[in-house]
Length: 188
Ligand SMILES: [Zn+2]
Image (cartoon, rainbow, N blue to C red; front, side):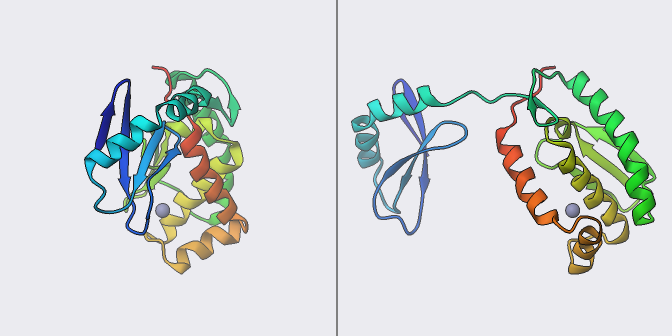
């Protein structure tokens, strides 16, 4: 549900255990969180009553930026591809040798919802957006996808392959998730 309260459009999120309405800043703007069964009229009135808060919250929000290896940098998708290509060509052989497995094919794709993928035929894909995150996180994705060449699942055996190379992989995973929320869209 969306509340149209000019000049604002505020998404509504229903939270089953919530008792009161609240406005919350998110990465993309402001949303209103409401208890179940809150009526549209009540929510609208709440939003109207808080216009001043919404305006100041939105003005404080910094627009999403692009990064190169975790450092703020205006980045085009061509530059990102070049940078990632170079880094993968350095690091893939290293991790392949350590892990005793080699992909049949490596591609960089513009996928947005995942950082990497691995097919049963040994085709490994990396997201173009990896050029935006710090390099240790790219290494984590390389290790993750190579581990799939051993185990095509996320079983404990799979995670043992990852942990053998990167004992702190859980921290890296969390950081990668955070970066996913911070990075902005690449220029064409
Ligand atoms: Zn996986």
